[in-house]
Amino acid sequence: MAELKTKLTTVSVKDFIAQMPDEEVRKDCTLIVNLMKKATGSPAKMWGPSIIGFGQYHYKYESGHEGDMCLIGFAARKTSLVLYGLIGPFAGRDELLEKLGKYKTGKGCLYIKKLKDVDIKVLDSMIEKSVGYLKKKHGVTGAA
Image (cartoon, rainbow, N blue to C red):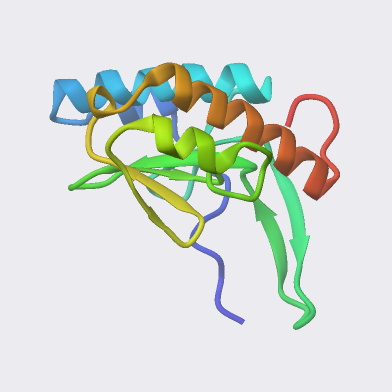
């Protein structure tokens, strides 16, 4: 079985964000770090080469494949910020998405070009509700 690329690393999140060339992206990432840290009660950690994640849970598929993953996280890609774990079936999701602003969705991901394109209070609420849903789903207690 191939080794997982998305695993916890010791790279500094602060240093990782500081090396990003675009100041607006650095500011957006810092704001998302603060929102996700508040929601999870967990510090930001690097998962793989580019995902900033919060909390952790263990998964095991019927195939026998298993591993650990961050409960919630994000990555700054070339064209957008990709937020992982935000579009699960938590209560009120559709209503919050209607109020969010400009975004796209993918399989389990929320894509936002710039945070100025969305309502930060709505995004904060989505993060909080997603974390609650994911903690319950994965049996995570306390700080994720």
